[in-house]
Image 1: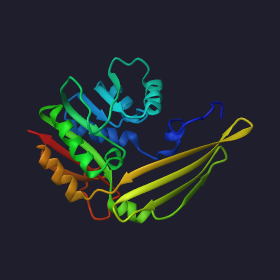
Image 2: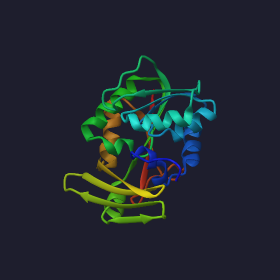
Image 3: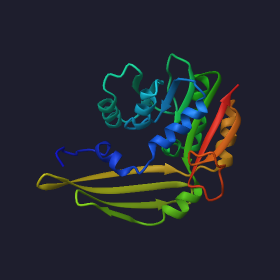
Image 4: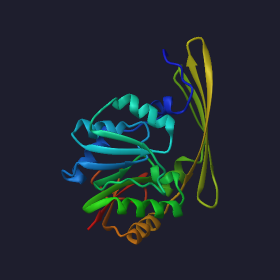
Length: 239
């Protein structure tokens, strides 16, 4: 590798096995031409970039400065994008939007109480008739796929991913990376906490925030959510 990797954001894109084009196509279809979008937990800006390339005006925010720096590198000085450092649970932007999105488990990184506050903040920032699209990793996914230790090695990157599921729905994740950097390996340790959210709880919080016409899909497809869905995708309207 020609680049020196010193933090998690620099290997995030290698770690994520996501069909961003598929996700973005779903989002564009559900937004129905509404092109002024608020994006929460934008990460390194993969979906942000695709939306901007399709003439969407995107205000995107994340809490991680490292993630935002990587997003800025991808987006450059695109006039279609504004990047901000904000917290999901209490963000405030002096603007209104025609759609809002939060992808790639953003809601799994906040507690139930924070999710309720986040939904209320989103609702407040949307115009009438706006759509809110977001996903969560399901309880089924955590119970079936987060019960083992995973090891990956491609010669340049080696990592060990360990998970600990607690009885209260908290998922503690530790990932130890060993990344080849010229003639040596650099170790990067990433600790994360995610939260398992029940579908019924999320639906209830959306309704409490004021959202209507709530639909739940299976992993950015037109198929409905099922008991064995790994990712539930919600769409909800502010009417």
